[in-house]
Image 1 (cartoon, rainbow, N blue to C red):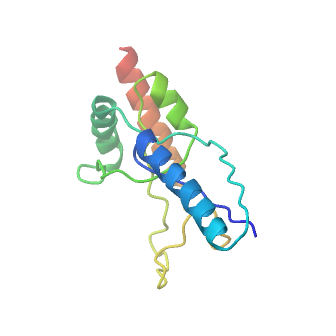
Image 2 (cartoon, one colour; image 1 turned 180 degrees about the vertical axis):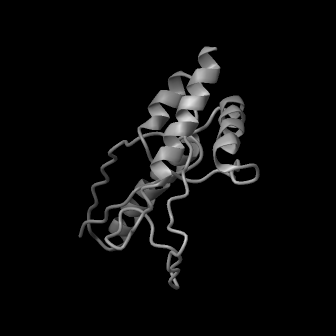
Length: 142
């Protein structure tokens, strides 16, 4: 039997603890069933952690683009992305763009998320993201 999955956590230490627990549980269950187990860790990107100062700065610029009250600093969300590698080296921010159509259908599962054949995103949001980047970069360089 093969079990596969991803582990996401808000800190690298927590992720390591989860992986160690999964390995211990796998071994213990296999022993109890008179079987053997092999646990393979494939390390993905670490947690994406925004720099608070950069996040506030970009939020201010995003507010100029999408209107006051529409750009929000969220509680942490679990994203797995190579951006984490950059943020480990230099202060940075990973931000999300609302991409739902104004008339998006909400099912019992909510609006369909990324990595789903039914995901239908509003490409008009791309220009908003570009404008946030440009305003932030111009202000940073001036």
